[in-house]
View (tube, rainbow, N blue to C red):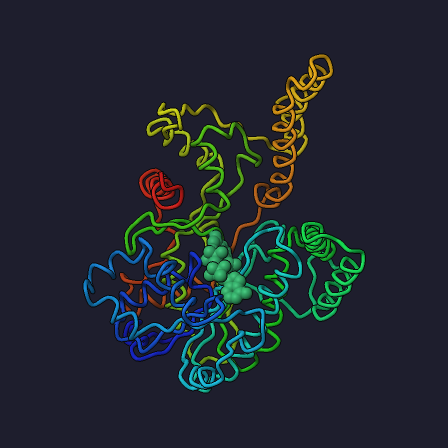
Length: 491
Ligand SMILES: NC(=O)c1ccc[n+]([C@@H]2O[C@H](COP(=O)([O-])OP(=O)(O)OC[C@H]3O[C@@H](n4cnc5c(N)ncnc54)[C@H](OP(=O)(O)O)[C@@H]3O)[C@@H](O)[C@H]2O)c1
């Protein structure tokens, strides 16, 4: 594998990016503009009704964000002309053929000009409606592949998947592509086209029965989880992402295809500055709830390995992979995570977050510091259920009895407790596969890419993605948690 200079490769290239209003692709766009201002053009596919609204979203949700501070400082008063010269916001939607790009002249221009495609668009809710997740994560990938086949100058198609398409596998998990129709539990073959019919039939039935929008949403969410479990995946998100990979593998023959599977993406390690993050996801939900004094325990084994990888490392790996895999005709899968080469245990993570919030407590609405205590780790669903009984269900019973005696006395508390019980159980069920996850992601392909970058000496310092370089305690205490508080919680 030969590697040319990354900025040199990107010079004068045209790149189509989907999902750029989201966390990861936004960081990719920023890096491209910063390291290669002579990129020819970036087409950003943005969900919007027309060009004006897509352009407005580009300015509000991409360029206007803190992340672009360094680019803004560099270009100063010339930023607007730089952006309008380099970026075209295209209204579109990956769940439609041709990515929903209505303007056929623009479509033709794109097919002529595009050298690189990054597909980062996705719905990442674990329990998304099945029809929605199937449309975006599964058929969206197929539509991107169809669009790519029309791009006569395409050098590489990079699709962002997730490491957790492996389901609840244990031990060493290899960077292996899916076979079409493969399931995780050996049940009958998965027919992706037939899944579309399952959705349509169910939707028609619900409509015939006069179901409300709310009832349809809830039924579609239920259907996603049911179909995922039928074939061995724990939730709709990873199941529909896995099917997206299958369709890409089957229908991207002869295209230079890279499927990148990051684990849990955290705040930037170094670039463009450390600690930048958007949104509160996965483990960050635990950090935020604990810091706010709302979390006393969580599920998991002390020995569970959390797989976290900073966003700038994922972006660097994506760019290096684009360069290294350009014009190759085979499919390559890359795990981008830390569990194989620099694991961090749940018990250490817990100690670090406790130490952070003990030293730097958040301030509550009443202006007082929020005290955090010991964070209990419950290592089975049985201990979780026992905890729920003691902390919520018994008090609920007491309030219900009191309520029967003194009418309406504790009505609000009862409603509040019922909500907490329902949401606690729902979250535990959704996160169970991850907090008890005992797999580790082998990243041999990614390591090879890392070695080629180091050996070729070209820009290795600008495009680092070696998880071994992460010092977890320092990163969590001095970068990630402060970044989460500043950029995501905005406290
Ligand atoms: N974040 C993580 O920890 C993580 C970990 C592993 C893998 N991944 C993968 O990385 C990718 C990026 O994730 P992220 O964290 O950046 O997600 P994100 O912040 O939720 O962004 C998702 C992006 O996809 C766009 N999108 C959704 N549906 C679309 C559609 N039908 N057509 C066009 N665009 C659509 C969204 O646009 P709107 O603004 O219009 O909604 C948004 O720009 C995803 O493929 C995800 O599966 C993420």
